Length: 78
Image 1 (tube, one colour):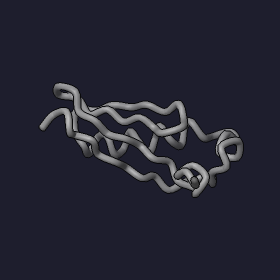
Image 2 (cartoon, rainbow, N blue to C red):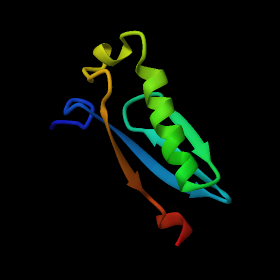
Image 3 (tube, rainbow, N blue to C red):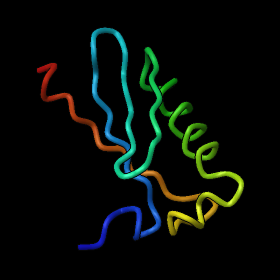
């Protein structure tokens, strides 16, 4: 099975807890949160790039500026 990490993308799963949106990367230690989806979008990009700087992207088989796939899971809040 080819994971998104192997395909050159980072997958972030977004959930909502109370007034906050939380985003966690699948297969990487990346986490961020925000009070709006617009703020979260900015925070996700910043968190991914910070995590992968200094050659870390190569260790994970990712390009220096990887695609970011965002999956929204609001099933618990419906």
